[in-house]
Image 1 (cartoon, rainbow, N blue to C red):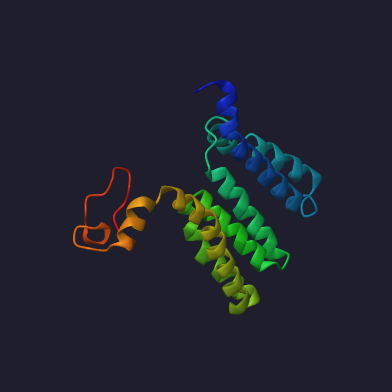
Image 2: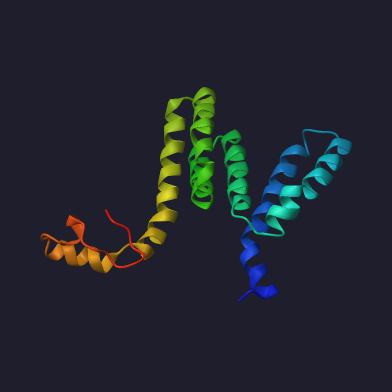
Length: 171
């Protein structure tokens, strides 16, 4: 249904993520800038078009990814690359176009903390993506066809290009 309550429920994760990202950015800025600059930044962030239209109006998943990337950067600065990697993995799972940031942030970590720390961060990112995506992919995999063909692989079975039921994919 497209009732206002249902729509708000769908938008809630993005709204909460946007508020968390806002709190993280403002918390990072507060001790580093003057009170005047802080107030100006807060006003600009609160009334940004991305927040007002992308999140409040549509509830886009990029807000969740953005909050996860902000958290990852703050975690890297606090010396927690594995937690940052997990946060980056969640960002990629929420919005796959964020994937291009992973090697960029990985290179930044490698330059600041060494390749070992960057490797642990990237491994945590891959595991986090897998932990989020694998269960969802498992729901949509053609399990009956796949299990049947594994039991009796023959010509015309799943592995040999048989016709698959609708809404399935071919390996």
